[in-house]
Image (tube, rainbow, N blue to C red):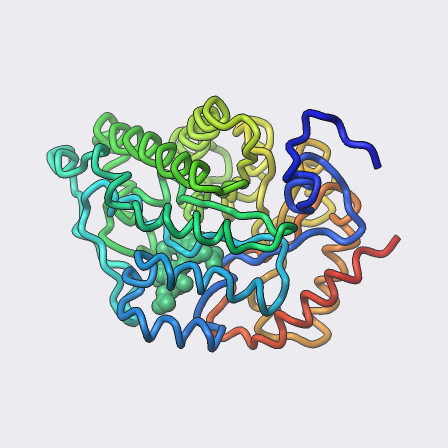
Length: 359
Ligand SMILES: Cc1c2[nH]c(c1CCC(=O)O)Cc1[nH]c(c(CCC(=O)O)c1C)Cc1[nH]c(c(CCC(=O)O)c1C)Cc1[nH]c(c(C)c1CCC(=O)O)C2
């Protein structure tokens, strides 16, 4: 097969990079969101050595080890840096901790006057161990495996910064956005800068692909109006991607605007992303007809089916492969792997994907 000279040499060997450049493959590359984590006994063992979850993220030897664990077991086509979207608030100087059984806890920002607590200047130094982990993972990866760096999208990260943790309805963040729009915009603009810097530092350390998680974009989804979704989700992501392209023109960005329904077409058309990651609610035939002609797709097996295993897992995996596997496609879940997932179901899934899509 001939390759154009403009394709960087690493792209030739890595199926994930080839698909992101538009290639179709009979056996799509795969990786799984949250592929390192509590469902793996070896993760739980390493986590026990580290103390807290954040200690694990900030100890390069241990973070490298857990990043590589799923690759060793299942041979995914990509390793995703072991870190969290909430290291960006930490980098900006906000207090963040993870409490057992409670999830993340942040000292909340509640209005314009709290913005002065944040500063961009210290981020690279505060997050230096994260970039060291990228370097170590990159050095240890087999040549066909791509290294993915990531960050949360500004709205999703802002929701944790403002609510002080996970939220069901984002009431406080939405009220700030609605009532003091100008200062909320300043928070989002700061997060655009911080995210570009954080993702650039990962590329400089060796990341070859970037993924942006807008896990809570659905907070702005309404039947008729897409105005807020555009302003708080699409536009900040578009700016991040444009700024990254200027700095790192060959590094593809995968965008995951979760659960936005048919509005996902806006992200395909306007975000500038190299590929879109689909949540489990996106209908396969519609995605194939509407989105895949515009850009490569990734997704979208429901994480519940990976817990369940058996015929339901097999049927949906085959359906996804036959519907989307004909175009440029990366097999993944529709959201992160669940902690109660039996590791042997992941092995069964990997085997099915390697068999490829029906001709
Ligand atoms: C919203 C969000 C967060 N973090 C992330 C998102 C976006 C994706 C999504 O929607 O799932 C992203 C994330 N978090 C983690 C990764 C690592 C890489 C990977 O394997 O995908 C990635 C890509 C590790 C993690 N991040 C976290 C864990 C669990 C920590 C532990 O070991 O106890 C892991 C492995 C903790 C975390 N981190 C976050 C929450 C709400 C929690 C607590 C809930 C939970 O425990 O699942 C914030």
